[in-house]
Figure 1: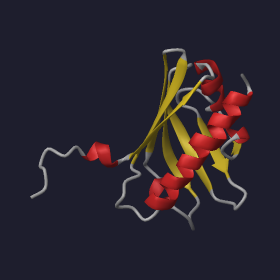
Figure 2: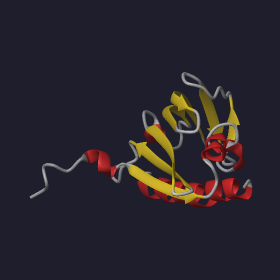
Figure 3: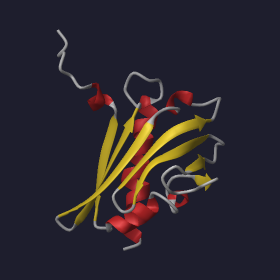
Figure 4: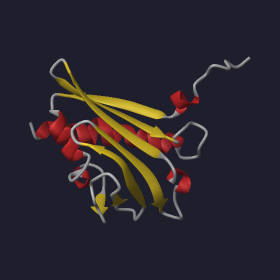
Length: 145
């Protein structure tokens, strides 16, 4: 019998990275410097209520609305549009970034609400996020130290 107390929120993709880069470097990388580690950015307005579009070399794109923009601490984005031929499953997903400093390290916690094992793109999206965050983003900010 399934555990009736299972929290479905726990099924959504989550990951964390720990770095010696400070929270200001991390926050900047999640805003104006997204192009350096994630994809090409256009139509950007990095503030609460703003939006941005990210495009990749293969032509795939998503547009995000910024629901929360707390400098050096927290970002919340909602996917509001995307490439019609690829992965419209993301539309409506909420991406939550939380930055904290602990024991002379900075921890970035990432949670994509909507990216669960029951959607078609979960395996490819979660492995791609792992690469973007644990390799691209982490390397990018640590090179700036």
